[in-house]
Image (cartoon, rainbow, N blue to C red; front, side):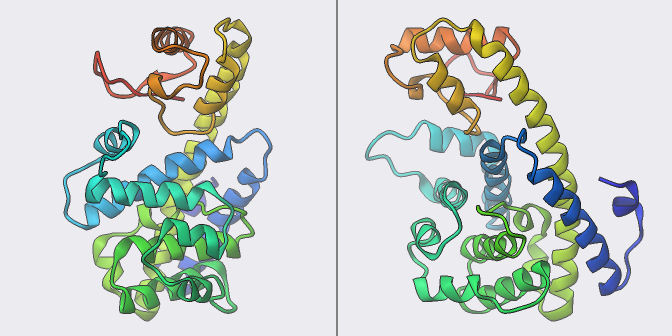
Length: 278
């Protein structure tokens, strides 16, 4: 990201729009690269967005607790309010942007309203996203669907196939109560901050993914190829979730081997109930 994008002072709406456009252009070029693990990047951004939404609601759960809640769910378990937020974001980024896919992520939102958000009229991407956010907060008054649909409108306007969360992690709770130009200013600031962090994250994940692919031929366990693919597309993976024919003990050994090779990290710091990720 050019330093003048982050260092330049922005007072007027015009200045903010220029800087956010420059940041989004840089991010667009980055996302066009074949070596960027886009599915993994979206999954990591979904966690950031969910954490921000949970914080807006005043709940204490942060990234580690959200991971635990979702990745250790058993059939019949309820994820709780924070887990529901995280699951909504994971569902939103999992499939190509469409009314149907967003309807799955937001079952409480009418599909006609979702269609209206995706057809938010003409204008620059951030302005369109701001209009969606303002309209949703004025009617539904719920942060999660408002931010998911605003990010969906932004992603679609940028020509991205999938929702790429940018707004939620960059906005403050007070920003959601703003209207008109004040909200647009907040959205431009959020886009600049999130684009910078997303570019850094994309660069880091690209390097890590290259290392995972480099060490993959050293793995001898059956199903290792499918396991590696899971690590390259998911934010976090429990050993028990690795695909068959890996039995539980072999799955744990494979995860420990990947940690030894520096391909993945153990994310919890615990001796048991561990999660692993690139």
